[in-house]
View 1: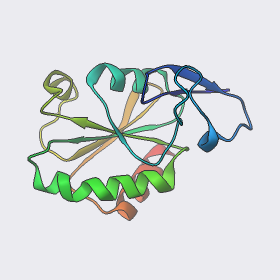
View 2: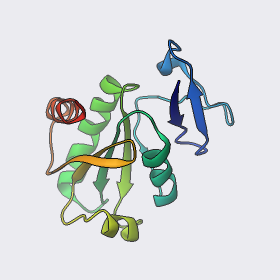
View 3: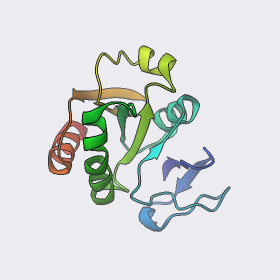
View 4: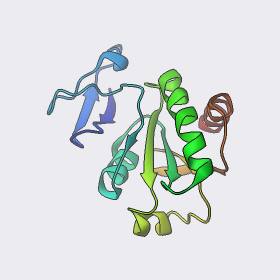
Length: 142
């Protein structure tokens, strides 16, 4: 049994062992649990993703004015299409969520933080290609 938090309504869903997660739908709102598009979440939703998801959660901390962030955005989405549902990909706009960005110790953007079981397990700053994102995240999640 694995717990996955819906990025649309924030409901925690249980996936039975052997159930195809990539075909899973939220029991509350009916949205697909994984669609290959990283959701841009507000602080409360992101905090629940981190705390309640049984799969690793990769967070891209970004801002709309940041050139490297805009360049990396499509690369992050391409990585999500390849890695989901084994890993959740989400984004955090540091301008709109300054308190959480401060608590996370964000000093520069883009920064990616990988969480598992509610704890940070790895962090990297700077724009990366989708291949580099996947290689870094998969190695860090081991």
